[in-house]
Image (cartoon, rainbow over all chains, first blue to last red; front, side):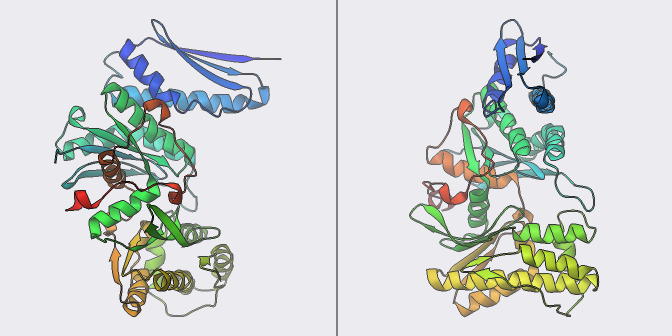
Length: 85
Length: 334
């Protein structure tokens, strides 16, 4: 089975990574079968998107697009977009 | 009583709005409205992008207007539903981020209940039969045993959808209620359209189809007039039955269509027949706004309601008659 994996790494301070992770987690439910999104914090915020079904690649693209948009919005909202990222 | 400042975030459909309230009333209410192109309806993803792009400006203006810093906000309320998924998620993400970053309690609000609570606060209606009419709702309600009970509703599309979908067919941009009302005032030529009430519920889809068809061979003003008269008469009949059944002495009208003067006139006549007083939410707060979320969030917070950030989900289909109304608005109003 083909798997498409997209990794996003954001070098952010822990407080921002923690805020983003918690702000996004509640929506990280009811994903279609074959599509997943995992978030981990080490020295960076790491987000991994996986798609096991080539027919759902558009859903994956839309999920990545919305997630990055939400992250950008959070950083903007907290006044951190230009300051620390 | 300790003064509590509540920030409300509304993002269920075309409006992104933030508002600050406290027990004294509304301190600010700032909105940015997504506009679909003429003849088109709301595109959920495009509306969500609009909300995301305008969120910081709206929040900053709401805080500035209220002369308060985000750090001095005591509680954050957000629209949990019902609404469009992508739009709801924008508001929820902002609310959750602010709650985590600034360590504030988070309160989920049902958007429809919030229309009713803000209407009661602004009009001082105490125990009304309520008519909630907007793009998302068309319901006749009364509060009983801690829940809003439905005494009539649409079986298909809402009154707001009827007006918007007809207006878009005529080439207008949503929301179309105001332009249809203006055109209707220029005519008294009634064109017969389907009048459909089943039990105490209304059905507007057949009316919409017939009105669209009639548009092709009749004056626009005549069809706007006929559409309003038919749709509003159906609703007024259902309201009159509910008034007679519940014996309420107040009728509260809330939601975006509440701004329509012709509908208010018809409802006023029904109220006179049943010795009831008509309360219409002020036009400024008839449509979706952050104030409805902030005020209801404040009521909920005083009742001890708050949720963990990880539980702060959104629900696209969240009927208001499933919400337990456990707060006491009278303690804040007097």
